[in-house]
Image (cartoon, rainbow, N blue to C red):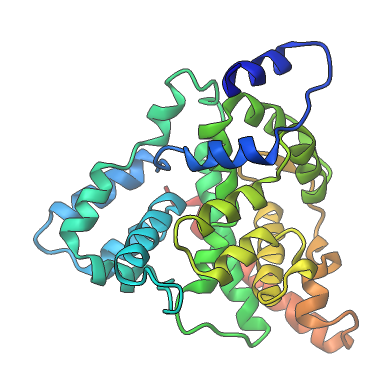
Amino acid sequence: MTADGSQNNRLNSDSPAKPLSDFLLIERINQCPQLASLKSINDTLSELLDSDQSFVGQIAEVIRLDPSLTTRVLDLVNSIFFGSSDKQKISGVEEASIFLGLNRIKELLVATPVIEEIMDLGKNTSSFPWINFWKHSIGTAIFTREILSLAKIEYDDETDYVAGLLHNLGKLILAITFPDLFQNTCRNSFDNSKHATEIEKEVIGWDHAKIGAYYLWNHHISDEVVEAVHCHNTPEDAKDSSNLASAIQIADSLTHQIGIHGLEKIETPDKSYLSTPGWSILFGEELKDDKLNDLNQKIEYSLERVSKVLHGIL
């Protein structure tokens, strides 16, 4: 009995589906084909790479818009130059691009499939709002960096942005690897992120955070990013990256608040980020009124500015 066969039988039966075993999940994630990108991003990057007047910085800016390309660039550079476990891994897209060179990036782009094409090949998920998924990823990346700045926490590299960008990578892996199960987890509205992850665990066995973290760990992404992605819905569980995971949780909530939900709709009341565990970890449970007002004003400014950026992108 194949994994696909048993999966489809369960989905089509009247009896409740059982979540997949850890062994089957790991096997299928390990066999996941190349992650896909948006056609518009692939086309823009291709034009830049074919131009004689493009700079690495410009190329890196386009790659930073794409969770798939970012993952593949960092995977490639870390497996080539930093394969041993005792060396520091690169988390910066521009630094990785300099190491790789334009020819390797061209090769990577040629081998990168397009999400619109993959989803039209019988995957039954072509109706999902993929542009919103990319916008949500970018918005969370931007807000993650800004929240950490408000908490006076800085990263020398791009770890903060990259972790925010990749926080929902597990959803893309689900769509490509488990398309039928993926539909069951994304067709409904959810009360909050916790509700959404509970449904994922019930239907699949792992939630998207664990799936994404395992994939990233298996593809040479830094331990800090891996743990932050794994714990972005439960930053209180992070051992070494609680600040980063907390910022992602807040950033995720803020991106929902401006109406960019990604693939599923989650109810996000105004200022709901104040009640997240991540807020307590970064800013404490009790703040003086003037301090809280100052933070809220800065966040409101960020919401307005980032909203304009995201609604005009892609």
